[in-house]
Image: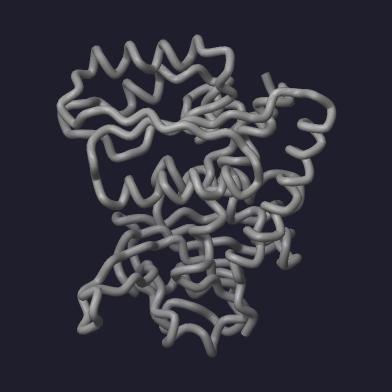
Length: 291
């Protein structure tokens, strides 16, 4: 069983990005600048934004935090988005999700200028991805692609089953892996909450990508021998440790590890790659490689 180590791939990709940023500095160019908009103090969101800031500092990319109160109105947040769109010193930015319940997330994401949408969530970028046009890819699917590339996982002609159809992971990765390029050329099945006999469909997969949000739901009865398993889940479950919890994926790693040919761990698999994708999109925005 091959462990698909996202931390290892992340370090490799960070070193490549650092080289590119140093080239920009040496040529007298403006260093790429990424901003994060954080509304409220959701602990998970704060931790995720802080990890992005640390990654930026590690490779010399400029970062800034726009911290806003949880009580901000949708109109006020829209005004801030318009300011960021007009800020010529800023290459890209993200609006950290989830937003407070009184704010329509899709409405806000639609207000982000597509050329600064380094999270890849704007309908323009999603549409361009669907048409195989240059765009900013959503961070998690892009991270999965990079893991498959790094470990040279064969995808052509393989049956890929994606469990979960979210706009953030499931649907985009199904599109990317069906494209006529590597990694891609898969025959893709999307399974979801309404799928009949999920287990039998998963057992057909050469590559199984799981983004359910259900702790350790997939065990060895869901996979066939030699399957490649990509676990996107990040779930906090209670345990008896000093922290009182542990992080697990959507796949029961202990059950599956001796049956699959390769698997991403949780933590340390897909998670570290999402930040890499964000930083790469910011670099591409700085270099005007898409818009």
